[in-house]
Amino acid sequence: MNLLKTLSVVIILLCLYSQAAAKMPHLPASMRTTHFIVRYDPSDPYLAKLTAKAAEEELIKISQDLGVSVNRTRPFRLLVYPTHIGFIEAGGLEENKFTVGTAASWNETISVDASGAFAPIEEVIAHEITHAIIFRALGNRVSELPLWLNEGLAKHRSEGLTHEDKEMIANAAANGTLIPLNHLVRQFPSDRIALAYAQSASAVDYMVRKYGKSAPRKLLTELARSGSLDKAMMKATGKTVSQFAADWYSTTTAKYWTIRLTRIGSAVVSTAMAILAIAAFLVRRKQKIEAAKRWEQEEFEKMLRKQLDNGWPR
Image (cartoon, rainbow, N blue to C red; front, top):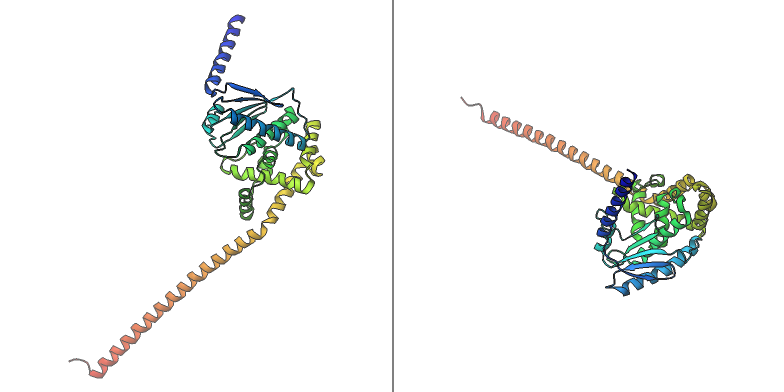
């Protein structure tokens, strides 16, 4: 009986492995750099070398900035896909077709679309390497890091807070529709993902500008040590997570408050103008009705006088 159970488990595992292998596009070529084992398509070795070079450069900069030591004896896996469709099919990302990179916490594997079709490879690499470094620094305690902070750090270290991000945040703040950071802890709302990413980058940008470039490093170091996000945030900013989130929200709202007031004022003026236009129309309509009545009365009186002057017919 035990033998049958063991065989059943082995068969299931082999089936799962074969399904996964069938789904993965073939990346048979491999190279080793200082900190990466790179898998790539042999038809484009130059793209793989460029990607590996960018990965090494970004890894050194980001790990130093975040205060995380990386050991060359423990390399990251880097999967370089030369086409976007190959990357999407490999990761089973058909429902997230605009994804360009992933980083797995459980096996420290970074997968990237190196085609540059949707984003520069340098930005993709920097973003995913930041995630990988965070995973290595925190280990099992990475679950204590809220999603807005994890994605905010990665976005801050790659493309940063873009003009489009600022526009989205300005509009949301002006409309009173910013998402509180405590609503972005485990997942982002599917209908407002772009705004959620923009706010995450804005919050980290606010942290760095107000508390210095060392704030993210202090936060990750303390979180890795204590496992307490509040302690880590206190170490980095002197505030609890909820206090920091409230500060960012109020600061961002105040920054764009004049836009909100202008929009409210414009809406009030537009409404008032519409009401005045309707009132003017009603007054004018009433005047026309009264004028028509007066005209009819005058015509009746003129006709009556004419008949009286000519005498009544016999």
